[in-house]
Image (tube, rainbow, N blue to C red; front, side, top):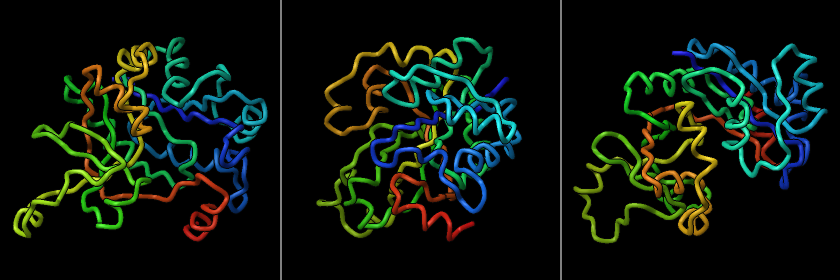
Length: 242
């Protein structure tokens, strides 16, 4: 099984323009993501997918592989899909370009999920969600079925605990989403063809479109969580870990 990693990297981020090129103790963020992913034992190839020549130049500088893609993509999934139209592979891991501390063990765990032939899409979930996180709309919650596939993702506190007693709550595993995805190549090529849905717009969660159209999403448990950089204010927490 040939598995590749793709790192979508846009320069024109609305919240933090140019963030792939910010300096993090002597290395750009995109270099730190790339070098972290290179430690994976499962990935045979890693490609940065971008729409900006400045990012191309930086990836070439540190010796990585980079590909120019359309500036019109609305999300990283579509950017990854364009890349694999010219590459032969079985599985693709979409590695977030704002995760400079990405842990290769998470990537390897995602890749292992595809040893089960029925898995179409896989992502990560971390068990144990505090009450504060359940009520934080920026923390995405997941409810799973008996196979470990996602039934629903939400910014709201799911499932509701309004009618649950302490015994039930103690026995229930609450999961929070860690937003790294892997796809079978065939599935990834199909996803950009799906029409947007009302439910994904309500929640502002792209993965709900996939569930709506009947795709399954395997949730791989992890105990690892690393800080990402969405805004300039997030830089300090990453620097503190380096």
